[in-house]
Amino acid sequence: MIWNEAKECMSRDEMQELQGKRLVKLVDRVYHNVEFYRKKMQNLGLEPGDINGIEDLHKLPFTTKNDLRDNYPFGLFAVPQSQIVRVHASSGTTGKATVVGYTRKDIEIWSECVARAFSQAGLTRDDIIQVAYGYGLFTGGLGAHYGAEYLGATVVPMSTGNTKKLTTMMKDFGATAIACTPSYLLHIAETLEADGDLDQIKLKAAICGAEPWTEQMRLQIEEKLHIKAYDIYGLSEIMGPGVACDCQYHKGLHVYEDHFLPEIVDPDTLQPMAEGETGELVFTTLTKEGIPLIRYRTRDLTSISYDKCDCGRTLARISRFKGRSDDMLIIRGVNVFPSQVEAALLEMGETTPYYLMIVDRVDNLDTLEVQIEVDERFFSDQIGELQNLTKRVAHTIQQAIGLSVKVKLVEPKTIERSMGKAVHVIDKRKLV
Ligand code: DLL
Image 1 (cartoon, rainbow, N blue to C red):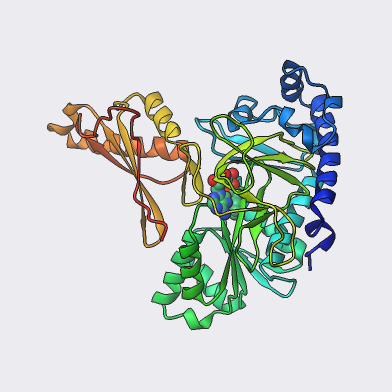
Image 2 (cartoon, protein in one colour):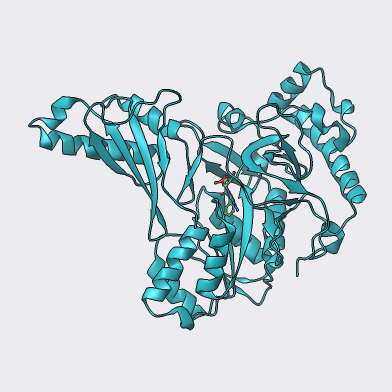
């Protein structure tokens, strides 16, 4: 059992003392090893000696996703590349990915955090866990995998894509838990239902995250599959899955704040907000070696509370997410920025810059259609050319965002012009 009273039930004073000590060390480390932070601190007239505890956190500069992109690929790493044992990457706001690196110790702490999350979901070494997050540069698959192994459970590394095989193995292996996105789990549930297999499975828990979902959707999953579903949160820049997870009381997600120091700030003024108020979640990684980040702006909107949970944990709790303060979409678990589509179209130069992304959910799977205006001549007698261009555009967008898309080329002036900010996205998904 990974449940660790020493870490998860500390008094607030003890936790803050631990965080303060770790913060002091972290600031010293980044100042001496990461030019980006040294310069940022020097510009603010700060030296490591000015940071003596978490009461000094507000003096430190913020970090954004763009800072990672500007220092692509390894510019923010705080250790020589020889100490990095793995990299992961996620989408940036334009073409370049944001790359993160892990030392051996980072992987160990990450695995422990995910194991703590699984443990909160009641899982132990006796469980058989199917990991159905994508494996690869995305942190979901390997993150959940290492956490499940750390717990001592039996891991079935399914990844995504072959639902029939997944449901067959779920039955044959007697899987007791699954880790995947909530929308994919609903799709899996429907597949089981359609095949009349719902009573053939031994599933008891699901650990779902990587995309926004509602409490109603969690209850729907529980009811359909007769299981308990838990909400796991994380982001690649901070680590991956396992930054926070809810427990059996579902009263917010416990943040593993011995490693990730949370703050809530006003996304416009960047001023700290009071307990219970909704704002942007910001994290400082207290123990990361590979790519430690100071006051990283997640863009995720939530609130925080510090009172003790019914489960006994005293860890800070964040409420279910209320959206983002930027325009990032999460489609089939993949982070997509409209600006990526725009940049790809502009670079291609064969269409107009007028486009509209329509996101929907069909049979619990996200779909993306991109409508783009093209020159009138394609609609006269050049049907073949229109089809060829459609294929080329689809390929270009697919390469840019890493997701298959349906492209519909439309005549000039079809897409509604906006008086204010251009509307590039219609998100029809209803998070039931
Ligand atoms: O999605 C890591 C992850 C994998 C988390 C598997 C949970 C399970 P990124 O691809 O970097 O990392 O995307 C991070 O996804 O800033 C949120 O906007 C969103 N997100 C992640 N978990 C949740 C959740 C992974 N439980 C971005 N609820 C984050 C709502 C979530 N949004």
